[in-house]
Amino acid sequence: MAEMKLYPLEEVLDEHFGNTFEKEVTDAVNAFRLGEVVRKRRLDQNLTQEELGRRMGVKKSQISKLERGDDMSLRSMRRVFRALGVESATLDLGAAGKVTLW
Image (tube, rainbow, N blue to C red; front, side, top):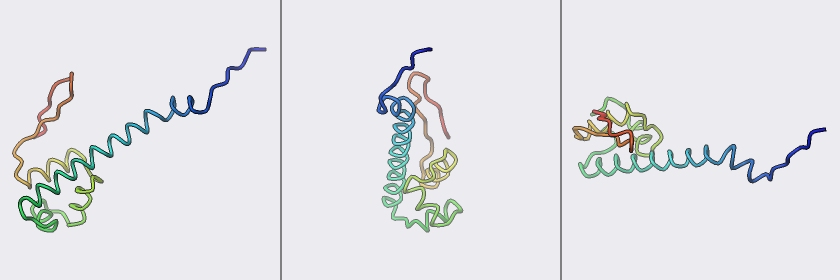
């Protein structure tokens, strides 16, 4: 009969969930930071969430989601930053180079 190898629970959890959890946390933190930038830019321009929403053609609740980092798709980022007067943006992909988003 073949010998069975046993692994400690911590090792199994790290191997199967560790990287996924770390990535989710990193993604959430980055989305939160982007939301904070949106909020700061909006406040610097003395705009309410409702006013920014009008510029974008969305409701105030959508702006609230963006500022919390709940909806940080590239499409949403493009729309909100253009509405805030950010003319262009690039994404730094490290060794792969930079990509112009708009």
